[in-house]
Length: 386
Image (cartoon, rainbow, N blue to C red; front, side, top):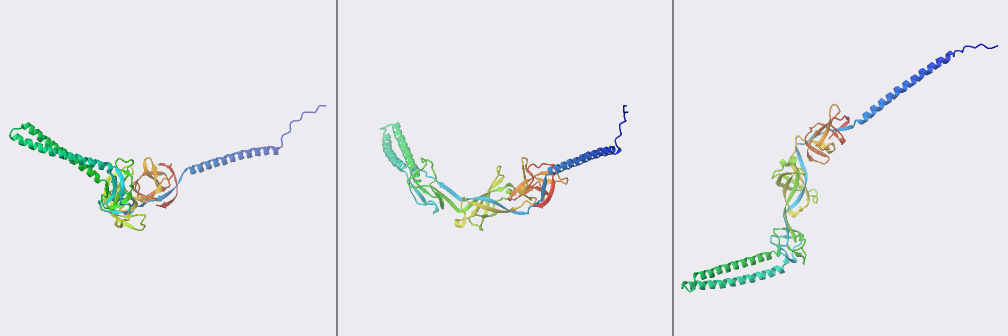
């Protein structure tokens, strides 16, 4: 007997409910994960965006004072200085003054032997004697012919020829005398003399040295300097060029006399700005009692000049060196960068004087990044005072 087919049994009710719960839970987990992932992505984007905004520090600039001490380096030079070369060819016979010697104008410093020149002088003397003898003979001949022409013993033409020859002989005498005088004047240069009162600051001549225009690598035999007064040269920034007038005074300090200052006065300027440095060359003069200031040395010059009342002082670290010129950066109310072109006055090292482009009280960015640009969004961290 075959068994009858039984209908499939229905799944238990509890299992169906469990499946539905599982599906709902899975959907919830997926949704929660998507929400979390979206939140993390947004957070990461916000963090990255925040990191891309540079943080800057601001400083408040202050006005420059109404007057200022302008301190500049300077170079000292002698009031007069001469490098004495040998004028004639020869060999050094002797020298009588060494470095440090105080000499008066015309003092002999060295003597040069000139054997070739001496022989030329002997020859010139002989030529002069010969010319004088010829002139004497021509004079007596002309006199005789002038006497003979009175009684028509000779023609006037012949007498004129003798008188013309006498004039030629006189010219020859004058030429020979001039040549001898020239050689004697040259011989006088065999003694090298001081051109003015001063001190011998250099001696390059030794006994036996070949000197003069014919010597190879000719050097000055002596150098003499007048150091009773000292010239001082300084390069003044263009901003202060208008204040550099003859007669204004300055104090001078030398490193070999610490704590001591000397008074100098401006005697002239170059009246021209050097386009390479943007400075005006100024010449000062200082009395040098005791000859304490040394030519060629370094000096520190301090001028008391009117300051730029509209100028401000900013840190050197706030300057931006751009192709368009010197700039500083400020931050606007919208926290965006604004670049300003500025004109620089005196450089004090850690700070500089700005004469145009920014006003006192402005807040500028200190140590700005090289890549900072106009309109760039920034975050201001704190503020300092310049």
